[in-house]
Length: 290
Image 1 (cartoon, rainbow, N blue to C red):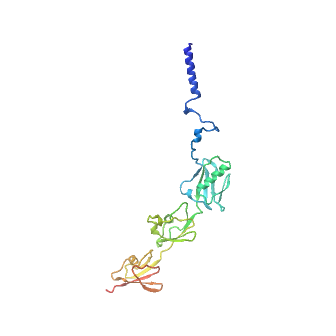
Image 2: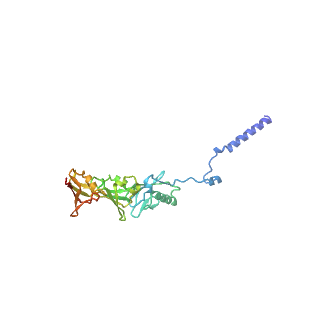
Image 3: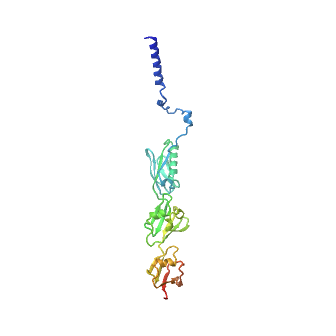
């Protein structure tokens, strides 16, 4: 073998050895566990850790209270969690970490508390905790009166008054055209039902836990005499005598809108067409002279 051939073999062998040892950058293996990251890696921002996960939707903003039931879990594991009821002292009992304060916390706040307790106790390095409300009991409004389904309505998110009314089936026939809303502090408001449906949100307020909603029966007035449909009618908010005559089918050919009287509080009074109708009024429409 001549010198030229020997030299070529040495060069080829050296190149193959260099590729075997170094290789292309894309084929390099990651550093072993426990090795120090490079300066570039240290400077790069760390990705956000998905350490806390809660159920989507309204329950993430729901503030837990006594007797609520939550489902607590650990993503990818079945050896932790389960269903727990919030006890009278505001806590729930969980495996490994024992009692955890749950009352007056949202599900996201509770999941973060559980996550930190698992980390502090050395049970898991970076657990992904899930919390979902599966039983609402502590926060509700009471709906009574002339509605489709009176009772307790749990509120798992901010609800407007119109939404609560829809959930109980609306008001029944013969109900008043307004609702009486009483807060837990005793403050009372009277709100017209027709205003709730106007689309103006300022007239459709949010309810709060402990609120009481009452739909009263409509008060009535009675009308006789020279009207086309005498009888008893529900009083609408702001109803005038003129509106009452229209409700009763209007005047007959002999009727006179200047001869409208009412028995009110045991006394007979002459009514003005622009005057208000009062509960229990017994109205009589007289005849024209000619």
